[in-house]
Amino acid sequence: MSIDLLAPEADSDVLRLALLGAPNCGKTSLFNALTGGRAKVANYPGVTVEYRKGEFSLANDQTVELLDLPGVYGNCGHSMDERVAIDAVSGNLEGERAPDGIIFMMDASHISTHLHNVLQAKNYGVPIILVLNMMDMAARDGIEIDTQDLEAQLGIPVISCVAVRASGRAHLLDYLAEWGGDILHGSAQTPDAEPDSLKDLQSKARSIARGAVSRIEQAETFTQRIDKIVLHPVIGLVILFGILFVMFQAVYSWAGPGMDMIETGIGLLQSGVSLIVPDGWLRSLISDGIIGGVGAVLVFLPQILILFAFILLLEASGYMARAAFLVDSIMAKVGLNGRAFIPLLSSFACAIPGVMAARTIENERDRLTTILIAPLMTCSARWPVYFLIIGAFIPNKKIGWFNQQGLVAFGLVVVGIVFAMIMAFLFKRVLLKGGKSSLLIELPSYKAPVFKDYLRGLYDRAMIFITRAGRIILPASIIIWFLASFPMRATTIASTYAGKLGSFIEPILRPIGFNLEIAISLIPAMAAREVAVSSLAIIYGLGEAASESEISAIVGADWSMATALAFLAWFVFAPQCLSTLAIIRKETNSWKWPIFAFGYLFVMAYVAAGITYHTALAFGLG
Image (tube, rainbow, N blue to C red):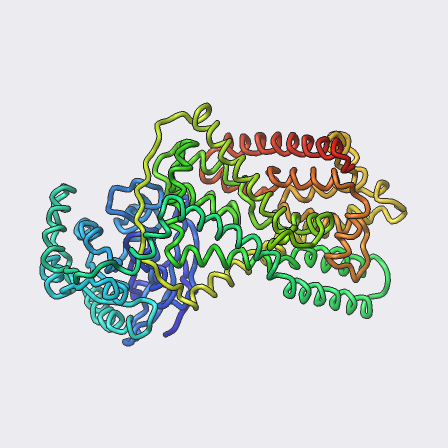
């Protein structure tokens, strides 16, 4: 199967097909399997919703352009994602032509729930086929589907499929080769339109399902047996918080060997530079500014991958929707519903996808509230700072069964969550007043992640982190190296350009316990929080063989415990991520909300750091 990325304008001989269906029905799994996972990811013109499209070739050498659209529940367009997907298949998006045909995917286990959506999709006026995915799981749950009867009653072709297996896709690919040729030659059948009345469509869907779908009598399905425990109002919450606790413990307990390997590699690179490049400013730039600066952040890649590994596993297994259901009653106390949980949990990886994921929230006030509190979740950019300071000041020992450093890290995460809920409560009652919204969410069947897709997801996240290091941290490291190294006659950090710049803001930060080095590091860290780590390494003038442990050692010797704790408190709240502020601007279509988010988070960071610093001094931790 050949794969290629698309040019902006599709060739007229290229068959354009759209994948349509509810969330969690397997559209993306099929897309990855057919295109090899390679895709062009972009935004629809004039909107912020992303789409993916890729190409693959059928057995008859017909090239297919496949669109992976956001999940939809019918054609009502409650959320931004749904509205864009509906406009895409209707041909109502500027700069995007309508698809030549629709592949409507459905989880075979939930056929009765979504059958009326298929009837609605017949009204788009293009050829359509229904693909019943995960037929193996439907059989596991005792569901039998008469596909011939279903096809006759729907009036469109029905194809059985198991998207994650080559053998399970074979019948679909064979059919696409024939169907695609018919579409391009204009001989493919366009289905008859259905009535617009949703009530009539639902009634017809129930009638079709009664005739074509049967369930073998059995005590409980596999999913139901698990849900009896996982969705228990008490046991379920214990399991959820246990999973989150283990996740943050694992970040510390499992990452050591990988971090050591990266540190060793960075040291070897710096040693190699010292053998090739003569002593002077050029060697310092390459070794300390570039390799040392970027390496000081890349060393935390194993911990970031462990964090993503847990999040991807929760998403792929079907547990994430259960987690949203479990916390719905808790979220309701602050004026949100469980649907906000998924964007907020995504924000633990990065606030940017978290803010973008809020598009699925139908209530506009809830969506805006979720966007404003998403930066308070402990994103991956904070972890390098946490790892550095916790490693320097918190003993690496056990408290009972638990790692003490992991407990402190978990505590910082909890503080961010608690204050996010407090701010949501205040926003919903003062700034964004409105009635409470209810949660309506489909719980997908449990399934084992597709290993290939799981690894691809981890790889994509790793590349995002590494690319960020090159795109943001590299130039920031070079700039801070220059500011901290020149003029050449400077003998102390205070007499460098960086020192002079930092001296302007140091008096403002002095009341909360921050020194000149911290003041300087916060300037480039406005671009991205993790830049603070590489900035500190450069500011303190560490040598060519500097490692993460050496950065921790010099910080531990120069800072007091009170200053270190205040620094951690600052980064729990600090709005130091220009990319997040930019995406808030894009998602809200207004400068008002990113400016507001920056202001309230900055005030919280300053106040929290100040209270932490003076409280620590009062307890003799100065």
